[in-house]
Amino acid sequence: MPVAAVRVQEKGQVTIPLEIRRKLGLKKGDLVSFVETEDGVIIQPAELIVGKALGELGRALKAKGITLEELIESGRDIRQEIYEEKYARDSDAHSDLL
Image 1 (cartoon, helix red, strand yellow):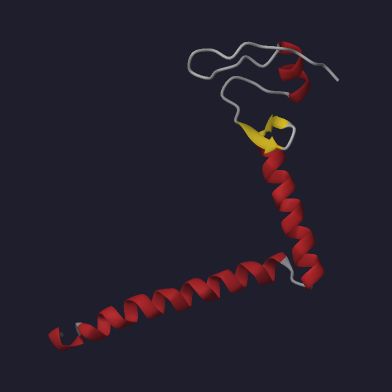
Image 2 (cartoon, rainbow, N blue to C red; image 1 turned 45 degrees about the vertical axis):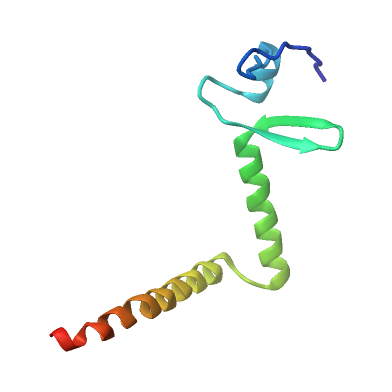
């Protein structure tokens, strides 16, 4: 595993060494995530964080016996309830104007 020391610049910027950028497939404009640990900081491509989060979500859904489709549908139901609560009251309050 490559180890490199780089200097922190005035605005907190550091240059990720070329060998590491190539290994991680990082290009100009890519996002990286900084993960603080007890021992320091881990820098990794942001898509790795997203991929891990999606994997954890999938495992949690599977453990509860919920499919992705069921989760999406329940989200639609909840949004519909919130919409009806918020806007049904507003339309009832103004129904005397009609």
